[in-house]
Length: 201
Image (cartoon, rainbow, N blue to C red; front, side, top):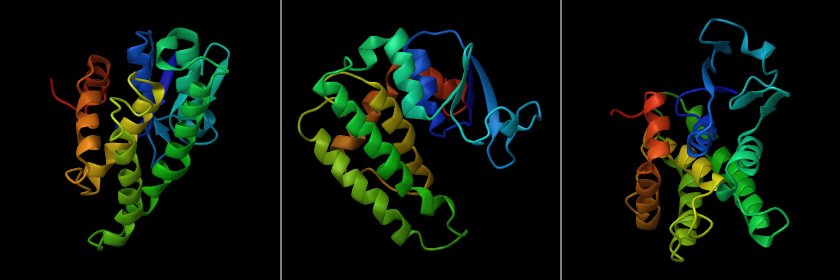
C-alpha cells in the first residue's frame, strides 16, 4: 500500500488509521499547490482529482478519507468501526458525513483569506461547528462516538488541528480541548505526526 499525503492535511486521518492497524505502507508526499509528487511527477496522472488522501492498493486507487479509513478498518482493524448493519455504524456514517460536508468545508474561507485580512467572519463557521462538537463530547464521551476510538476520531483530529493554523483557540471548548489531547497522546497518532514532520520526538 502507498499513501499519497500532504503533511497536516486531512490525509493525516488515513495515516493514523494505517498506524492504528499496524499495516505496512509507503508514504508519497504531494505538493498540493503544484500537484507534484516528491519525485516531481504529475500527481494528476496518479489521481485525476488532484487531492489527498489517495491510497494505492493492489486492485487500484482508493480516494476520499472516509471511504479509505472505513475500508482499512473493515478489512484490517475492525475495532476501529462499528459492525456493518448496526445503528452504531449508521451513527459513524452520520458523523463522517457531518465532518466532511460541514466541519471540513467550514475551513475553506480561511484557506483563501488574503494575507493580513480580518479573519473574524471567516472563523465563525468553524467556531459554530466546534460548539456543536464540544456539546457532543460534553455528554460524557471519551471519543466522538462514545467510549471507543474510531476512524471518525482520526478524521476529526486531522481537521481540528487546523484551528491552530488559523488562530482559533480551543480554550472556550474545554471538552474538545481535552479530547484533542487524548487523541494526540495515542502512540499511533504521535507516530503519524512525527513521520509527517508535525511533531518532534
